Image (cartoon, rainbow, N blue to C red; front, side, top):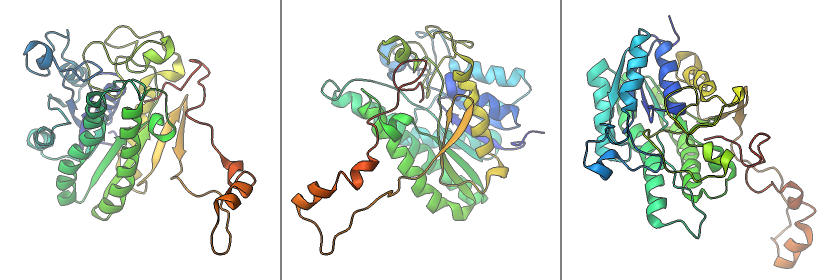
Length: 337
């Protein structure tokens, strides 16, 4: 008997990488899982947009990742259903959640993991690049949570785990769109924890890590946003389906994120609400809500000259490094989603 026995989970972007490992782990702990993945490339181009095929058919991209993960789960004795709905579409997200209820009778767990990347610096990023990434990450998280929370409220129980990112918490070069969406997900997590806690629903965020197809470009200096199938917050493990991923050090295995998510999805984690957690190597970490760490006060307020005179000695002592610290393996921002 696993910690999720009898529960029903929806995991978005679960065809590859981090999402795949989460779906398989939840199933191993007893949950029936809806595996959502539209079978897109990393930049969000669906098969239908390229060839006229149905999203999720995988014909032109060489795979049907949602069905593949379902097969893995079923072969291990679990229960799973594929979903090809796009989380960026409000009605499609409703259909996905309704499909979980229709197929398994309920929805207890939602993991908002789906994502795409279109990395460019600010001056090179187009409006379409920005809108596409925000639509999947930020709006997609809202869409899915909005529909799932209604069922959870009626049941008096629910677990929502939102996948955020160090890029949104600390910044990362070339990821204005991605960082904006991931920071917004952190903010939404705080709000929903306040709103939904009284209904027995917890809402937490996790900033995972791992070298996947989505993050592989960080180690090679290559461009992200192209490749094969999988709408996921990180895709293709080197040891799983997919190609183009370098050898993965043991502490960068995407599967290491899944046990933390499974715990947050369990009844045992009912006291954990409104938190932002993460992973670094073999360690799980917790972030503090942004808080005031210093202040300078003057009766009646300040002039510009007075601020300049005192800023360095008071507030300036607490300035943070810009962006994410260098990663010891990759030599730049850490390989975290």
